[in-house]
Image (cartoon, rainbow, N blue to C red; front, side):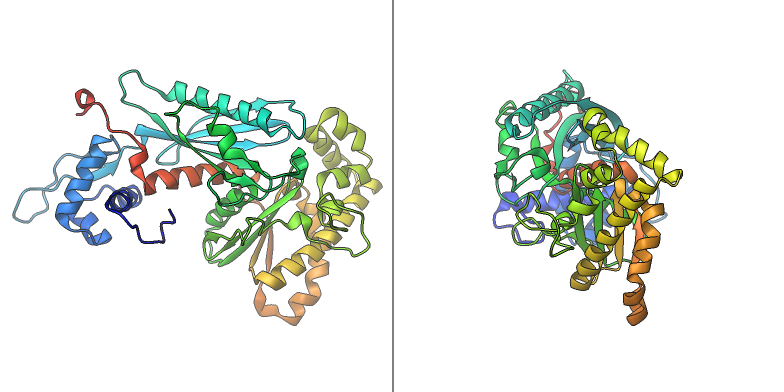
Amino acid sequence: MDPALPPTDSAAIRRRNLGLVLRHIADHGPCARTEVAAATGLAHGSVTALVADLTDRGLLREDDALRSGTRGRPGRPLRLAPERAVVAAIQITSEQLRVAVCDLAGAVVGRETVPHELAPGAPEDMADLVAAVVTRIGDTAADDLGRGPVLARVVVAMAGPVRDDAAQTVVVAPDFGWMRPVGLRELITDRLPDSAVAVDVVNDANAAALAEFHALKRDSRGLVLIEAGTGIGGGVVLDGRIHTGSHGIAGEPGHVPVAMDGPDCVCGARGCLVCYAGPEAVFATAGLADLLHDKGLQAAQASLLTLLAAGDARATAAIDTAAQALSAAILSITALLDADEVVLGGLLADWFPWLAPVVDARLTGRRALAPGLDLRITPSALGADGIVVGALGFARRAILSDPSAVPPLPAATRS
């Protein structure tokens, strides 16, 4: 259910109200029940009942009573018990799964990478691998006495547009050889026990874009992320919310055409940004195609950065071509969306010192014509962690908004 829409039944109303109380205490605690009631607009009696429910689930704890200086029983401030539940993020790449686990306060309590050599075009095999990782995380978090922490939610970040339907369908993922829609959430959950944790699938760049937006810590209403990893992805944040469009494909800059007579693209168009600024195109132009094929993305990237630092002509020419194409895409995207911030992530952030002069030169005319637009082009603030940080944020906010996903503690273990 969209939290912006009014709930239509009593159970949904209670879930929403549990979320209102828990989010307020998580953001502003420790605080008294009267403060929670005033901030949420809920009646004091309702807050008392909701707090009892959240306490039974192990999500809240009470501090010792504090004298307020006024008559009446002293208040007992409430605070989040972040260790009761954990959430996990799993970023799928062409070479590995990047996994992170955090508690409800956002503190990361575990990280790992799971290498794989899965063949392209085999989403079922990827679902097998992800389900195995989810099961292992849940088993590690489980407590025989039921005291937690419990694994409350998993968010899987995947390259490619993700449709907002029950299956959370990956519409297409050319970089993984998925040329047809794949109901990835269904594939994963079908491989988990019936009582297993809830799983969500999100576009990886959308997760990173929202994380970058919150990391900026400055007044920005519109942000566009363009990042290079397996291919070129991106995300759009408008007024603090991810904008996915009608079919989940908004914010996919890799397939913005930047040349009418350019090479054919796997998406069916010609001259797309990924054909010039995507990793395969850049490494090939720099003479590193064989290294990419034999040793992988990280080895090719390390070699390219070494060549760029040495002023190698082929490497410099490859980045100049990428920068020209990137500039054309930025001009088109910002003219349409009126964003004030463009963040370059992934490999583009590493290439930023060589990209920036060319991009700035291409934007000079637009900036001179409309200096008040103040378009900022910056490298990622979060680097390689952006996708995982964003996915953890999605998962954590989902639990704080609907704490009913966390089961009550066994009566014998409640304090």
